[in-house]
Amino acid sequence: MTTPNLMLLYVEDPTRSSQFYEKLLGKAPLASFPTYAAFEFANGLNLGLWSVNATAFVSSGTGHRSELAFIVADDAAVDRLYETWRNAGISIEQEPSVANFGRTFVALDPDGHRLRVCTPDK
Image 1 (cartoon, rainbow, N blue to C red):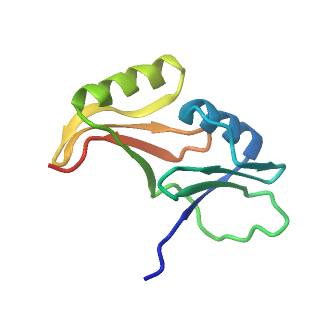
Image 2 (tube, rainbow, N blue to C red):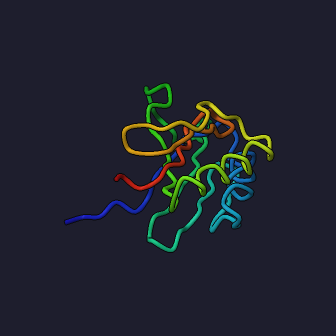
Image 3 (cartoon, rainbow, N blue to C red):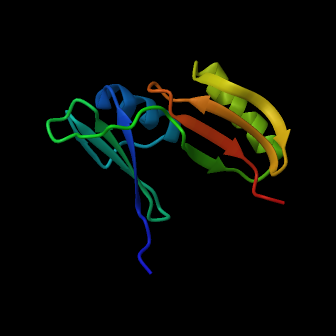
């Protein structure tokens, strides 16, 4: 079976988005160009930030209907990350709450992509 290893987010300004994710993730991008930046994770997943203004960019899609999820160990870790991100000025779309799968909150990156923090499904 083929395993996905790259998630692309389409962004207005890859430099701004790269700086946001570098601060959020605590690591520098693996690659950085005027129209693209990429981050690599130990689990094999890569995050690409691709400019909607790039010459080769073609998309008829709009909106942000997906989420980049960060699964943390427990409720206390959700709350700590919420405080850290809120204090860093990151926009919070959904305050911490308990959903059917556990404690969670949602933040937004500079382009409005949803960043969910939650505990593992119970």
